[in-house]
Image (cartoon, rainbow, N blue to C red; front, side):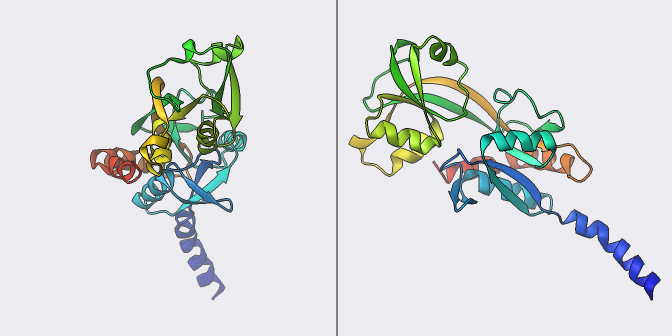
Length: 240
């Protein structure tokens, strides 16, 4: 009887291991439409839809780990997360050597935003505060920050950056297009913020941990299939 129980336990162990949820990292600096976070849990948004769908494609559940940006980097280095989505090679400089990049599934466009419409480039602004997200890097703007031509004013999330611009805490801010469109859609036309110019366009992808515990190749193939089937675009369209 003991031998039978041992055989049953050994037989079910691989099944239990296969059912372990995939661990996805979510940066708590993101806001809608990227992710809606309530009481420390990711409950909606592009990343939630994308990551749950991706896990389902390989027969797993998604465990969405909301954490600060610096903790995300530590988790990458220690192998405590399996997948990180919505990231660009232009944003990572270390800690991803154990991970394989997926194909890019979209482009993020960062734009200069103001309350008054009209074309403008950040290089034209002199000695003013510029709304930015804490911990985010803006390579084009860094020389302007270093020379003090622009004074960086950080907020914890992209939504907070836009709220401060709306309330005239400063005259200009940086936002990605998706967040700006989401912010504006709830406001009448005369209260909307305006795109003044594009400052960056970065390819967006996922990185997947290269480890026997993770169905790495299956996840990467699933992303190719999702792009070919138009699933990425369908997810994005729900939040535009």
